[in-house]
Length: 201
Image 1 (cartoon, rainbow, N blue to C red):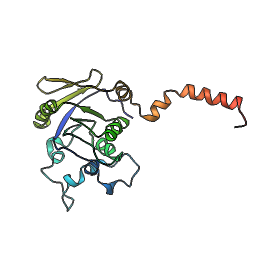
Image 2 (tube, rainbow, N blue to C red):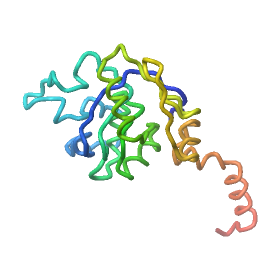
Image 3 (cartoon, helix red, strand yellow):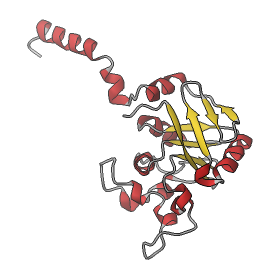
Image 4 (spheres, one colour):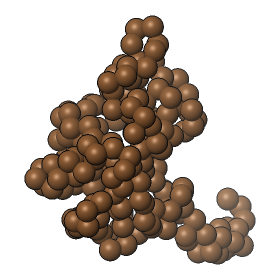
């Protein structure tokens, strides 16, 4: 998993509430177990019309936001089913940080396991960032995980809270496997001892 330290990028405004995981990546795209290739189907039913052509008014189809790396969203983002394909699709598109007033718990934790930083902020602060994001590609936002700050294009600064353990995982690029491998020496020593002392196993 890639480390998350400081991200400076375009933020796309998506103030809808209750964006569920089926809206993020519809069920017909869940056949794959690969984490790549899902970005083209992100928000499929909102991004494309019935003929498969891009919907011009959808935010991620607008030229200013086609390379967005930050999503500023509405309340209860990621609700619905627990599909891990949702963060896979967001990351494959290029979204590395999502800012919203609240997230569904399973989606929130899945983000950390896949290298995405979800940030919870009060609605009035989200509104400020939505205003920044509405300016398009000229308004860059910086997210600094180490010092837990978001800096806007006009010099405004917002701080955010994050669980220290989850912060450690993102800063060091540690998913569940990576966390286990941090103890590789102890695991190897234990297995060697088991082999020597209980060879019959």
